[in-house]
Length: 142
Image 1 (cartoon, rainbow, N blue to C red):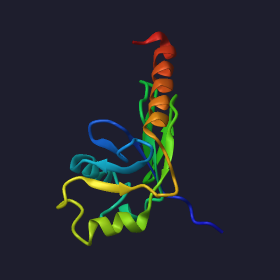
Image 2 (cartoon, rainbow, N blue to C red; image 1 turned 90 degrees about the horizontal axis):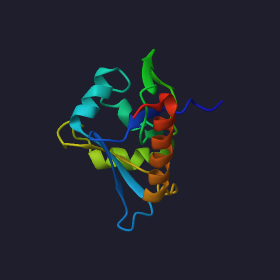
Image 3 (cartoon, one colour; image 1 turned 60 degrees about the vertical axis):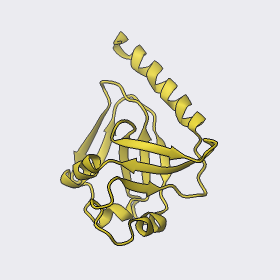
């Protein structure tokens, strides 16, 4: 029996940023600010060790007012109208990058994307446009 995948839902924005290869063809890192890291730890989603056991990050590039990520029994549950991209994390490289230091002393926390997965800037941009249209169509809210 396969163990349950550990997924973390994150909205791309001020506290969650993305780094791509120079030509924008592949996502390399997902960067969490210290404040975002503290938030997910304080919400009980991860602790200072279990953050290195995250299998994938589900990126929400844009959401509407009906999109909610609830924390239920220590797990995130996504509700609402939005699409997201599941990004496989290289757990070993993420842990090596931290090099055994306290995760708060290195500044921003980096999830390193598995090299087998190729998500381009263009693919995320297309998702962002799709979600923007969804936002404008739901309830005709601007």
